[in-house]
Image (tube, rainbow, N blue to C red; front, top):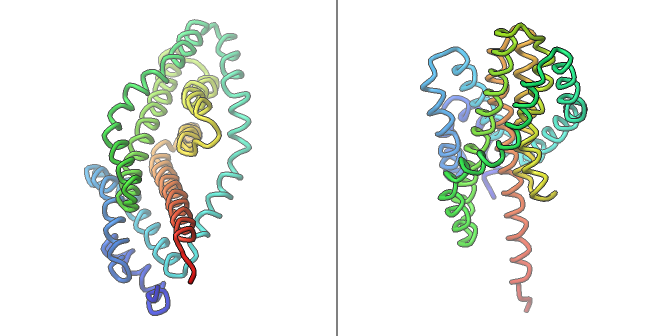
Length: 289
């Protein structure tokens, strides 16, 4: 790939930062097309939000694209995987703590406050969430069929684009549910004058346990499902902490960027696996003289 020698990484990053996806034309029209399609859906949503937060997110996305172009031209995309691995390790401790004690502590706290009906209804509600999510998930069936078609026909870029849209919808559904739980906890706290920390601790289990349950049924190799669980956990934690510090607005761009980064990370894993399988197949197909 000669362009890695002749093209300057800093210049590629500059073009992408200024011109967005079209800046990838500096060294690859395919990456331009893929990035345009991948960023089309988020940008379509952001441009309909007339606020400073949407503007901040757009510029941060431009910066991430520029960083990707720089690392791509430097042939150091593996750094992205290392960054995400360190992030996952850093935040795993509070997540593990909340997974074991969050809902239990919050539930007992609410019981002492006399809110046994709330605890019971919330518990029963979480039992039905996986079934409701499965029904809503049916809207992705056409995309799943297209993804299978792309994989069978060895259409890598079509598979990556379809996979991204599929992941984006899944994570959007998860975030909608998480925000619903957060909003309900805050509303209950205000209307009934209950301790917000107790509600947020209990709400963590309500928001994340349905996705943990569904992921546990798919086995340890279901990377997409476990990343979906992580999305529910990290988004809930960020929004809850931001609310407690009276800065709930700042949570939106942070959650958006983290979730979008998870989606890109997930696609990079798929792309690397695809390339690995292709190399293995090529080695089998090679016939020495």
